[in-house]
Image (cartoon, rainbow, N blue to C red; front, side, top):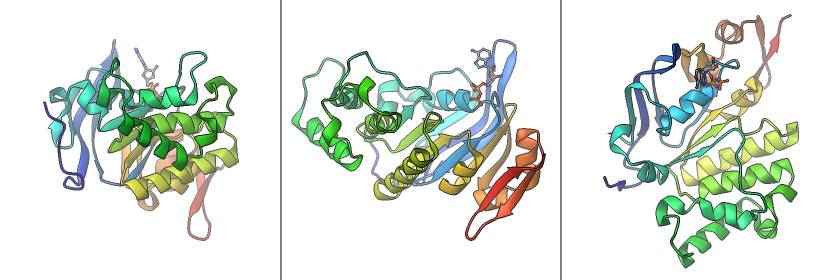
Amino acid sequence: MSSDFSPGSIQKVLQADHLTVRLGQHVVLNNLNFELGTGQIMALIGANGSGKTTLLRTLIGRVGFEGQILWMGKSIRDWSLRNLAKQVAYMPQSPSSDPGDRVIEVLRIGRFPHRGWMSLDHDEDEHLIREVAQELGLIDLLDRAIETLSGGQRQRVFLGRCLVQSPRVILLDEPTTFLDLKHQTDFYRLIRKLAEKRGICILMACHDLNLATAHADKVMVLKSGRLLACGNIRQVMNEKIVSEAFDMPMKRIELNQSFHFVPLE
Ligand code: ADP
């Protein structure tokens, strides 16, 4: 099946209808309905075990499901994994690379859906990789082994690997778990810049409620595999929903243009 479509022509990049996932006897995702539009940043929040990782992995075809998932209007069942990877990039919670891999080699992996594993390096790909490296401040690190980088630099490399896939959508699974506050903030600012500049749609699972609130446009709240709420941050993120999602009373504190949640106990 062809993955061609004209950029900008599709407003709804993702639609999930009655999405249910069972793993063994356990219903891990329960009848989810939601959609994602072009250029949006959607935060996926919920307590540990609420189903965030399972949802992201299901959306890239790695977990069997009931119901429907449409990417760019086409059922995921009709996309080959390779063609889907040209449109949708995924950064797992702990991205890995082979020991000794240099930054440039990790970035090249992002071109595999376009070129295949065995193809020779292509000038066009190298140009694109350097462009992404430039944008993410990785040019001086291209020859460094991944394991010699700081946590923040490494996350930028794995984000770069997603970007060189030239995707329309990036799914991020708790991308800032191992970063300190400054690097978390830097990372989310970078995401925002990329979403705006490249029109990329982002769906990101976030463990930090307040960072998610500060950096996303929309939010999806999961609780025990059910969709508790979905919509604009300011409307959805109220005390009732957030307290229910995390099983603890939370207070919303208004700041200048934004707001913050703190536990009441
Ligand atoms: P989160 O990312 O929100 O922490 P997960 O998607 O990792 O949540 O897990 C959701 C639920 O699914 C958890 O209760 C987890 O134990 C369960 N789960 C995950 N993988 C499997 C599996 N392979 N078999 C059975 N249950 C699983």
